[in-house]
Image (cartoon, rainbow, N blue to C red; front, side, top):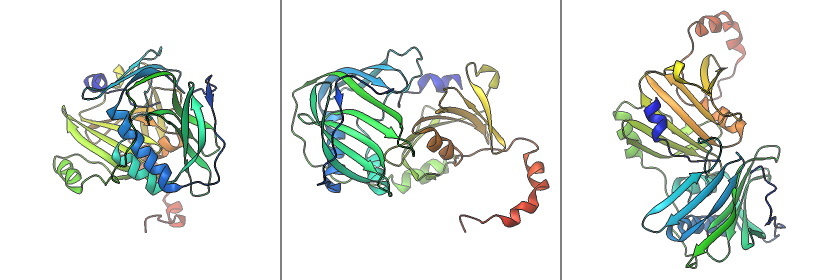
Length: 319
């Protein structure tokens, strides 16, 4: 377990109220295609251009971000907690963008500014029209500058924003092809190796990427706004070594949680250890985790059987 935790890359996150970051007034001429296309182009710009800066996150982390074409992106945390997550803002994967377009109405909705730079605002809207996420895209370069993820009550649940950034050799954005789904062959190959995992989690989070490396399985689930990073390793969980984690009982099994928001979780099931880092509102993360493999604690099914008469009144949601 300790070896797995040592190789996990920080991958998430404003107690917002950041100075120099202006909100935009939504534009009545919202255009879905423009919004999603702009985010695709922005993801490409975040990979292709050279830039560096300082970013704040809702977790209280201060991040030093650097990107160099051909070398890649590095994100260093200056947070007191070295496990502070570090950003679904920059360069979202093709799978995340495809899921975003499938689950939300994505619109360009005005203009604003972030750390003194002009920005275009894109919003992801739920089916009822409420805002699920906002993105500020640098007008000159296309680099994403700020992101907010809102919960069902409209409160900022997760996010990050540059407070200073230097962008070299800004290049105009170009159209990118629509991203596709994760190949079924990849999923089948991993399952043939004995890995057990779903392709859909509660809340509509779809499997966007999957890979086996270094003896463990890495899975990424997303609905385009929220992200669940799941790491699976064969073996048993040594609970005595979980310093700083607290146990929580959910639906007859135990999950260990480290951060106050419940977005870093670990548990054992079926000879495997599951470690989850979520970049999502807490309720979304909690519901999604219940869709992953779990073993009930001893005695759970006995207690369940004693209340089996209630089962007759339940309706199978999958029937």
